[in-house]
Image 1 (cartoon, rainbow, N blue to C red):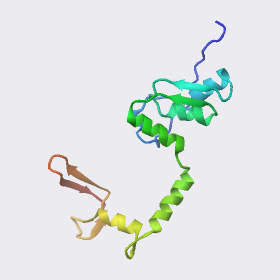
Image 2 (cartoon, rainbow, N blue to C red):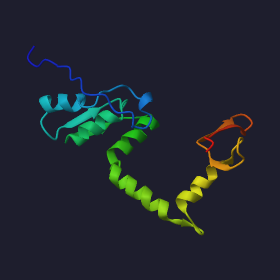
Image 3 (cartoon, rainbow, N blue to C red):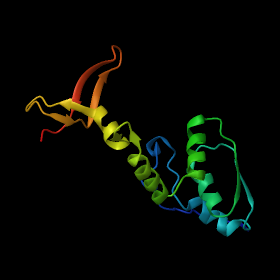
Image 4 (cartoon, rainbow, N blue to C red):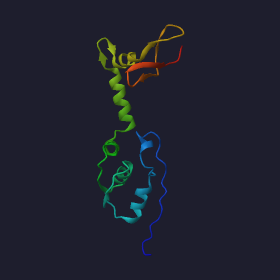
Length: 149
């Protein structure tokens, strides 16, 4: 066999990617490792199934031109997000800037956080809930999750 195909194990993706648990487990680095040894830089790579949004983004970051056929809107959205995602620093900066904007006389952050205020069952003080549990069929509140100060 003139050109054997090797296995490139790569590394696991971190759990920070949105919807990662619903995507095929394609290890990070496996596609770019294979491409680096088997394709000239800048080659066009065709992904005819588009099953994993991470694989084409990895190849593109490695300098390859990638054509992806994806008829599933979820992986397509994640691929577009991965291809154009902002850096962590710029996202944190944008969120910090957004939090300082005002809604009336109040900064936006405390205004949005006020939507989660609820009365504590034990001390009757107003506390910020961690989450609310709703009944889907009747759209009624079933429970509130919070910590009493």
